[in-house]
Length: 260
Image 1 (cartoon, rainbow, N blue to C red):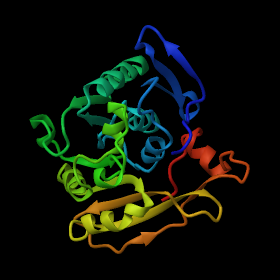
Image 2 (image 1 turned 60 degrees about the horizontal axis):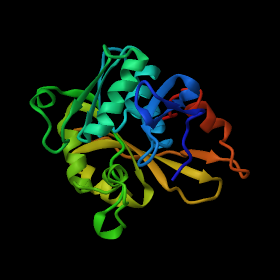
Image 3 (image 1 turned 30 degrees about the horizontal axis):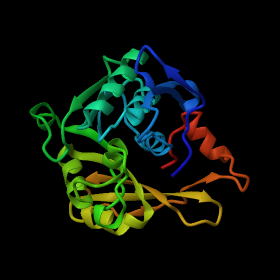
Image 4 (image 1 turned 90 degrees about the vertical axis):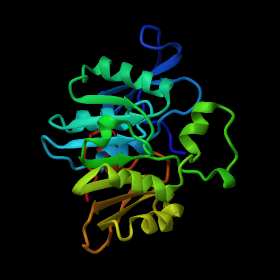
């Protein structure tokens, strides 16, 4: 939906062959290997990573990490945290592992193959301080299935949104925080899934341009909290001419955090 945030895109014959590209995120701080065809990360995972306010020593789970865009951005933005990426798509995870190795982040970014709704034992034994997720956005009954398998897996839900949220909360320690980026029109379902399970819900709309309806929204919540919800002004992404706003540039390329 949004334009890719890479600043360069080149074939990388050593890491992934002619079927992959090497793209730059966060102003070149992150180098991400992606398939040339199929699902390719846009700005959603970059904004998701910017919404995680992890402190040194805290553990973050990137649930459904894909090719690792959010995991890598998190590790670069917060150099003293431990990031675990969970992904069931073997091909996507292979690229994520190559990108982690390319960045020399093997000691701080761990990648695990598995399903969020039935996580491997090593994850069930871990209580995370943060869970971040950029889940599939589309309900299969209401959307046309993309022809390319990787794009279909990334966009179409195989687990309904309520169960996805429940599975994310299950991986959190008491008082831990969940951060999601999702379609704004799915907000009622997100709030219903969080009700009774998390509080301190904070909503941060992402406006395409000034005066246009939000298409995406960042949602942050704290497990077990009963604190009231907050609606923040959010972020306008583009100027009238289509260029990123100064505030968006600071986050997408300058690695500034989301102003919660």
